[in-house]
Image (cartoon, rainbow, N blue to C red; front, side):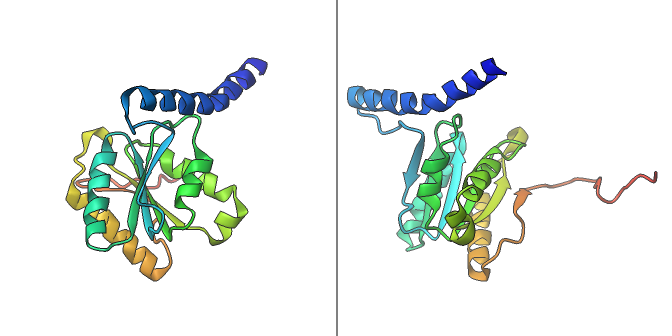
Amino acid sequence: MEIRYLQKKAEEDSAGMIESVGQEYREMFGSWHVGMIESHLCDDADMILVTMGIVYPMVKFVVNSLREKGVKIGCVKIRAFRPFPAEQVVNAVKDAKLVITLDRNSIAALFNEIGSAMFMQPEIRAAGPMLMGKVIGVGGAHISLDLLSQIVEEGFECVDQGQVKKDLEWVPIQGIGYDPNLHVLAE
């Protein structure tokens, strides 16, 4: 147990090292692609999309396009997943009405981590943003601008209605001929 505790402690302490090395990298090469997260146009956003990896450039494009039309939307890129930058993410999204996580993994890691981070802060839990998660692009499924636009449109419907109808959903799901929920085995 002690070894695992020390591993976890080292992981938690690595956040400072990630930030420090990132600053050094920035100074040497002038790159702005450093740090635990990147927050883009979140200060006054009603809706914030949170993702990581290869999905982010397309999300940022959608956000920039909608901002040009006056839509209050922003995005956050998670650069380092462990240790999870819970405090930074919560600070970036706390004033939004809705946070949509876009996970490209079957365990909905962002949805679960951000939900946990928001739940752990009573003021955010009580009056913070709603949370909606979408699992996209798993197994090489295509992620299109049209799909992202549909997700954003659904998000603004949730903002208008003041509630999220589906907390977590895989999109798009097509051509499934078997629904395990409909075929319950008799005991």
